[in-house]
Length: 146
Image 1 (cartoon, rainbow, N blue to C red):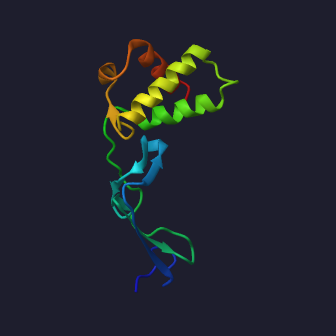
Image 2: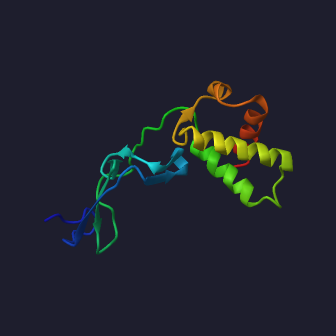
Image 3: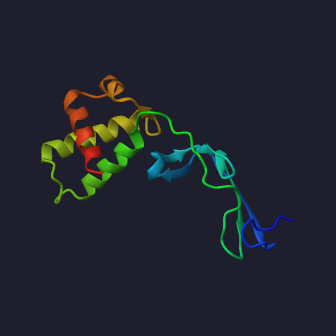
């Protein structure tokens, strides 16, 4: 039986979940917006289709050594673009963008979701392989507003 790293209690729950590609792991500070996909490989927490953590039911500490380093690819996470676009579209009436720009944001959203690029990271120069110049300018504006 495991004991808690922090308080020594033996009330440590082992939590294991297995999913089929519909997992989410969002950590904006590390630029991770993995939704409806595999878990990123995070030692002692998750990876692939599996979530596997130990949690002390006495003090609430997740067991393991922290902080955890997460390897994040270089580039712009396209999921972050989607999240920012969706926020702008929600605030349609308050948005600083024109109606034409909001239509272009809808198009960008459809391109990313329709091509299954949601969890991809692109370098700035790779954006032009997927988007028009006016779309790239809007993407940069949306990201600057964070």
